[in-house]
Image (cartoon, rainbow, N blue to C red):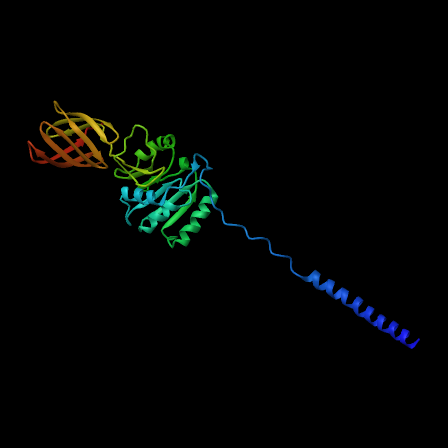
Length: 282
């Protein structure tokens, strides 16, 4: 009987110990912090994803550099990339010391570009804004880069042609309609989207000008023009930004357009200087 009674007493003690520990364990469990939510993966675009006006396809790094070379981008330039995607062209321009800006409609792309620019150490030179291309003012650029479709290029063309003469426009692969490129180059060992095209915004010279050699009448189509100087027809009419050249009566005329005046030199049958002033009302 004593043994049984002893066991009963031990059993009671054990039961008290167990029942006393259970609430403490439950309380400890209740006080544990909830598990942290899984980390959200950084946004990564995929080639071919749909955008506002075009699908996004990244320009190869080799062609980015070719485009910047063709546009002769230096630290003195202000580069604006239209439809800047993941920011690679803007970042590459900033690495050359240029001030560079990207205009992109997709806010996730804008955030991604800002992060990449910071990681590349060019955050002070590269900026990005979320905006519609057709509602944006990019007139301060000295160089425009883009990888857009031909019909979008043509829609942007009137605004581009109003930019300062000499502004360089560089496109990945796609043309500007009947505005022929001044130059193009292709990257070797490339499967697709391998050509960079360059246009230089020409000065506006169409109309009538007065010169000591007679009236200069010009009809302009982008960077080329035809016309007459006095009674003579002109040939080889070409503009390179604000630089102008043509031939008439065996004389080669070269000069610069400065708004309503042109000044330059002549060679060939007559050597010297020349000047033209836009006729009143022309």
